[in-house]
Image (cartoon, rainbow, N blue to C red; front, side):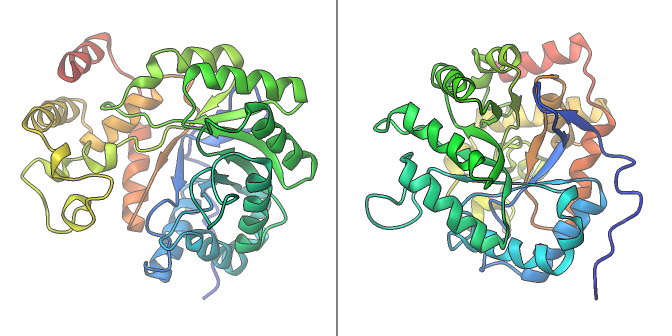
Length: 329
């Protein structure tokens, strides 16, 4: 059956300008880190993307190594794009990244021009695209001069393989240098993708101030701390949870008594606000106007629709913010 998107798809989504650029992103973007690899059910992945676009999510975020196996998320996304979204390419913002390990030998990871250009060429083939909208350097490389990495991003834009560039996982000092180099090259940095949640707040120590000052957008990943900031673990560890099944990014060591107590208190506050904990965790990030969008993951189409409910209340009173800070302290 051919896919026809909802005609009301742009009515209820909130769109925010990305820094000082001309680009707007949906307040909720869909990340394809998990659940889109060859190990996953293809039709389910397809339905997740349909549901997202029907709800006004126009931004899909990938990376060269997403899967598993690495590369398979881009391959599957490319198939779905060709099958269902080819008429809507100009309504989509598609991003990819390179920086982590992708192939054997000295050119398969980090930040050399050789790796970044080769990696994007591979990504474009997998996704069957001429260009991506945003291409990120996925992590800082301590051994490659920042000038080389940033000039690779500039080159990629000049080659027409990406419209905009971004960086991910850069600390404030490295980010500041990267922004200056890119500005001097004439390809300003569009966006920064850091890890940020109620449990991981390092971006508040200078990074958000820098992004605001420089006019660079921000799109946090892992906003629910891999599922900790949901009601999933309030009554123990469910059999189908990430802790029970993979334990790679979240395991029992993360579920300390102290943390679970904080989760329970946050959950009580969310209920007072008329929200689920996950909604409050997302809206807490979006309360800051320096945040452009927040990246969610989903293993079922319903989870996409559920996450969007966070947008119903992104305002917090001073008392609520004080209470949250006290719980997290």
